[in-house]
Length: 124
Length: 124
DNA sequence: AGCCTGTCTCGACGCCTGTCAAATCAGAGA
DNA sequence: TCTCTGATTTGACAGGCGTCGAGACAGGCT
Image (cartoon, rainbow over all chains, first blue to last red; front, top):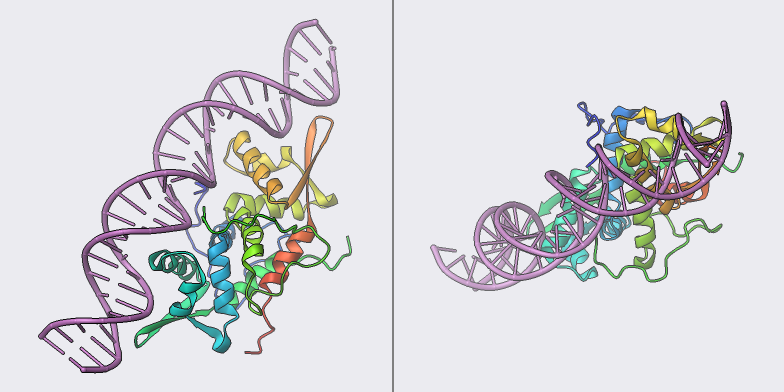
């Protein structure tokens, strides 16, 4: 997409420590921008955002593809493609248990993105 | 992009009241997913994410295009295009003052996105 | 008026992405 | 082993997106 420098050392958004200070506090470092933007990009589709939400809010912390798919007017392969995108963005994990595949959210990345967008209360 | 229902009534992310409960708490409503995903999509590019950060963290709360452009290895038109994208996503406002154009962040949307991604402390 | 500088718009190019149908893989059960 | 069901992969297509150069517009000069 953006043919910018393209982060040679990918930032690990699942690391324990936070990657960056809030976006409105200090400029996002170029090396981190690639990894962070990739995560936002994965959430930048209505279907994926809903999938992410369904997975993250599911009882037991996980959701079965068999429950996800019928919630949309899309074919199975398309849902599978979106789930793969979320997986490759590090937002979810997949696990096969018998016949079914279950997806589970990775709270760490979500937390990092949330803190990146954090804005001071209302003191401007 | 996604040929989903496509929200006929766009959600106003700049409204005073928050649009939705945290993504991990309750499923994002399909009608809201479009508007929210559009905002995330706008942040889903390394250049735009850095632009957003430079604007939001700038002294005085605003940044001049003349300061933004030289920070990237991109032509003026390209930066202008990205800024327009951020503007159309409702993330920033633009104002011309004399020769220069200044961009300013809209904290409301940022806040909404942050609260959408909010995750419970660490109590699982 | 005429020019210069800063910014945006337009048109074009190539890559990326969302979607589907068809084929393939993975387990479970007979 | 064969078959059936659930999920993913592959291949193809249309449309979207990031980028640039060229041109247009805006405002401040002289």
